[in-house]
Length: 240
Length: 246
Image 1 (spheres, rainbow over the protein chains, first blue to last red):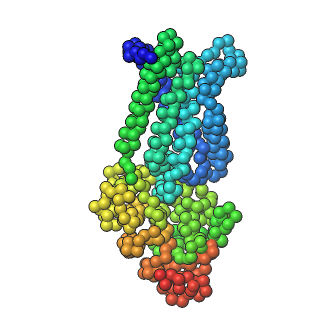
Image 2 (image 1 turned 135 degrees about the vertical axis):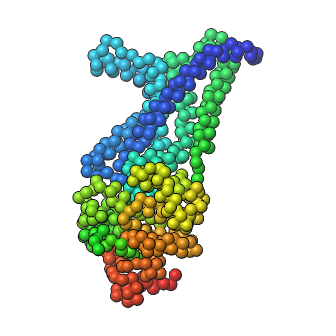
Image 3 (image 1 turned 30 degrees about the vertical axis):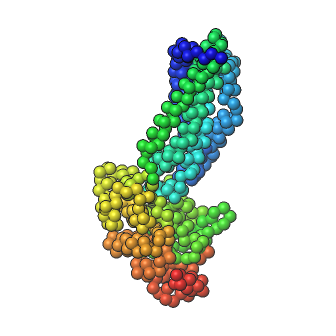
């Protein structure tokens, strides 16, 4: 077996193009995922004492509804494979829109579909991370905050939030890395991310060892950057 | 003196279990009311109902000028006028002693950060912890934490202070320093206080009135020394005998 280092050097520019796209999908995806995650995570425990004052009057059915919607979202996403979600969004969803809205043409860019898929997918898992961290905050601390007469918003942003955030970082790091690696699945909808680029070079020169080794190392570098960033963030927070 | 707290026919249930039965109670401005009773008698629930950490199931509650359940949306207003000290201190672990105390006035009373810090320094000084302002709760002893917690509740400038077994989680040698701070508040500021405690010495020295609770009812009520000397009910006699032995 001959291992040719020159093959690696030749393939690097193209693979870096793919890696760049992988980064873009990941960063946009997990940013959106954080947004949906916090929303759905808090939504799933809306109206419980984990978030302070229990609701009364009309807020009882409203928080029940919010809980059900958030729960439905999380369970749907967790219960279906991400590759099916991507295919649905890229191939099936446009057909649905065309039929319902009676449109001639409607399509979603593969890259857009990839970003949205990661957003919704990561969002569901992050929601569980958020929920778990929030309900683990000592109930006494929530009551102490309430007893000072602060608003619910202040309670969440200054007491529950900061305390929950510390517990969220390790599992969030996990999820960010999983989402980054999940972008390789978008090979099926033709997004030119790292795995796709590797596959294409492979198909033309059949140098599996050199190409997949390089691809693997590139993923490893990217996941390491994510992990180190989060660890730095964790260290810089005031611990107790 | 005007009543600052009134409970009329108050019941509180958790599910099917009724823990407070038809409680009638008034607290006058400036009064120090001590609540004693065996565990599970409903004394903690009683004071947690006053600042609406527990919502009463039926009956009426008046705190300052706010009536519950009619003005349920003004619960936050009640909490601004009623400070609370917890058995487990419950200091915010991510904030220093100073930040813990300044938090209430700054956020709940919208006092400027600078002014809130001054209020906080002043109160930390009063509870004898001026030099600990930059410590995190985890770096303080139980007694010190509880004194910071008292300062934190006072910082919002409440009219009433509730103490829920403030010394029960403390090592014996730290109970004194916390009780001293509470005595000082009662004597110097004439603060209205409702104190759930097992400290009978504190009750007789500082309390103006004492209630004994058992199984969700107020069984006896009167001047602390008199009640402790001449308990009328069997249950209070029994309870006092137990407490004195420890």
